[in-house]
Image (cartoon, rainbow, N blue to C red; front, side, top):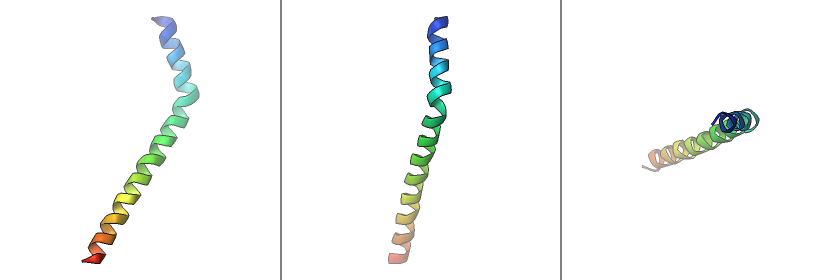
Length: 45
């Protein structure tokens, strides 16, 4: 149990930052697309 949590901690330290950055980029991209489509829809009317 202890060794598994230590390995997970190492993985989190090594890759956690990159994964968080990728997640933030993906979320901001999706938000930007949603906002752009909303703006296009309101201007179209």
